[in-house]
Length: 183
Length: 296
Ligand SMILES: Cc1cc2nc3c(=O)[nH]c(=O)nc-3n(C[C@H](O)[C@H](O)[C@H](O)COP(=O)(O)OP(=O)(O)OC[C@H]3O[C@@H](n4cnc5c(N)ncnc54)[C@H](O)[C@@H]3O)c2cc1C
Ligand code: FES
Ligand code: FES
View 1: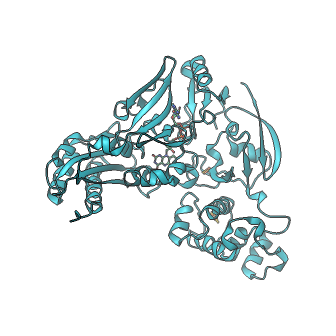
View 2: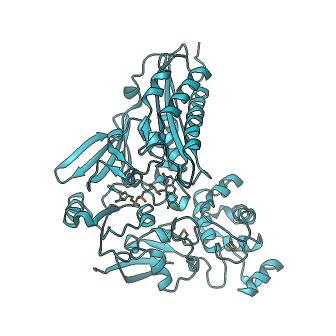
View 3: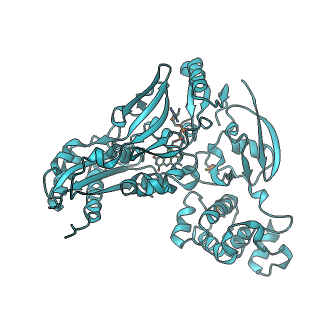
């Protein structure tokens, strides 16, 4: 078996890994400790393994690691800046869209790619955008509310750099405090 | 994960890709978005040749029609202005219905056809658009109508060769458009939810003359036979008649009669057969509504 070297960026950091020809990106990322990439169905149905590949939401269980060579990958670990959560993460917490949290990394990353392309979505568009992210806890009402709130509150979500996200310590919403305490 | 794979090649020229396939023989497969290949995970596949670096992801105008590279993704098709405008946007609509955005960002047009699922969503619209495919093999390039490309369930005319591009001929020439003619197109899909694999899918295009008489009709359905099909008998049932509820009902009966569906976990034979008629009716009704009344 010819193992291959892949060079890529993960959350902005250059990485160079040896992978097997049959490895999928999901397994390689988890092997490298990106545990925010969740293993669900492994057949492209559930979206738990969603990452951004060159800015686009993809199921990492259906991408060969070899195909990610030269690409820019963003996992959920790459969204917060130090102790500042990304505005979309805030929106999910504030909306109460997070219960067990298994689906959340995929939903948040998919939302990020979606809002960059469609900054002012209708609720129907938001619902459609999340069609490939299954949640077995809350259902979809609150995640859709979170997407709409993120779009409304955070300056269209076009570029992260312009957005003022709050520090964790500044957050007053008691619901999200509780969630955060549990993590 | 396919731990049995022995090699994953990422060629940058078509010649190299074909050489790698030849060397790999029966153990080699092309791979594009991998959304079918990784789900199928065929243990006989030992060597993969990626088509992602061959410059085949494009949508280009071509002599009044279009050339679509095999590695063009569903997301590219649905977002393309050209595809949204061409023939009522039926190809863009079919692409937009092909799975979640995570799937559509990877799934390619070439993979959809090469995989040759009877339910492939791009097949009915491409069939009614009279699409042709360009194939590159050891002996050079060849071009054939899409209708001759599908040979059976998961069987195509490729035989290990590379699907390079899909050609959409200009509408007016293909349709033989004459003065006063108006045309309309539709894509319909029935799934458990729209982004799910189709239980039945269908596409139609019609052209009517100034008097509302049908000059030509094209009807294709998927998931009701081993391959996606044009239903010529239903097309001729419309030709020369006024396009109205009566002629549409006649065409739909013909579709139900011609359908040769199977029962699987998604639907039974009877349901599929009935729904093939319903989807074609919806498609033709949408066409009828899309043809504006003649201007005086
Ligand atoms: C969750 C999920 C939902 C889906 N929903 C839909 C849906 O709604 N509608 C639908 O139509 N499909 C759907 N699909 C199926 C799949 O996404 C599509 O068929 C897709 O277009 C396949 O393209 P690909 O690039 O991923 O192909 P791959 O998986 O890379 O390849 C598929 C086959 O085609 C061959 N191949 C690929 N490219 C070439 C080429 N250029 N030349 C020669 N051979 C080639 C490969 O060898 C392989 O045999 C779904 C799949 C999943 C996992
Ligand atoms: S684990 Fe990848 S989509 Fe479910
Ligand atoms: S929060 Fe538990 S799966 Fe969505």
